[in-house]
Length: 120
Image 1 (spheres, rainbow, N blue to C red):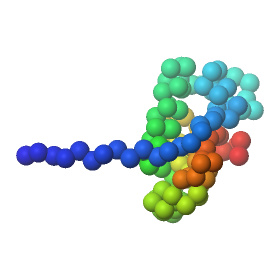
Image 2 (cartoon, rainbow, N blue to C red):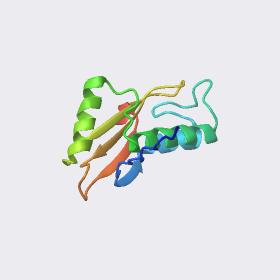
Image 3 (cartoon, rainbow, N blue to C red):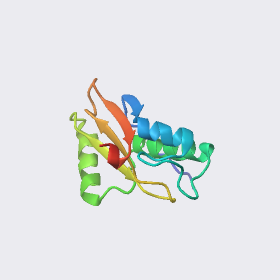
């Protein structure tokens, strides 16, 4: 029996940026508006890995913990490449909730940002 691999369709995320809060969390483990890392915060390599997995999954069209209605809107924007917004939500494995938002998807002005909901 042979299987045919489905080609992976990566989204064009445009320019990728992190908010200062996400960048500081990666570097220090400290969340915005807090003075020290939360109990059981994982080390630097694990924080980098988690952010990378979330962004890579978003680029593959996985919307994480996004509600079904918003996931359906994402699928429509992805399919139509209409310059709309794609948003994925990640809230797993004891990490704080992270949003990844791609604005102007399918246009030359497309960009993607990873941020905490508190930074929106």
